[in-house]
Length: 161
Image (cartoon, rainbow, N blue to C red):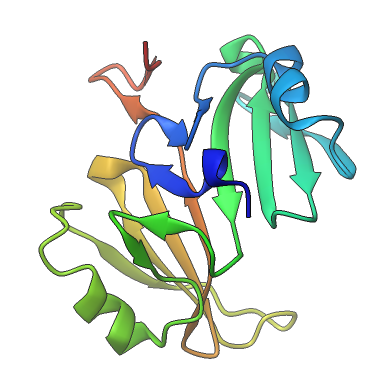
């Protein structure tokens, strides 16, 4: 694991990677991604916007850029147990152990949601809206952490300095 990208920073990024970076900034820092996914999603009845996800397989993380935000880095996701949040490794923990591990981290109130489907029969999400953190569980084990910048009262991203 690159020490420069080990620490999940709430509202700011991942180590030295900072929300608000351009695609060029990330490519200069990390190199070309192993894979990219492009897709669109509706924002109104008559409009769609584009989104692009970059995947870095060696480090088990993804970065997302959104057309609505002028293609700035607006979300990150990690799945390697080497990443740390407030000094703790969380990926791979069972749900109860995870809840114990985050006690005292002051992440805010959370929602515990069932996202099970035919494709993923036992998928759960613990979401912390105040800190823009999502924790994904499969078969009661934490498999992915997603987060983005903080948002103001108008739901606009607050880009870190």
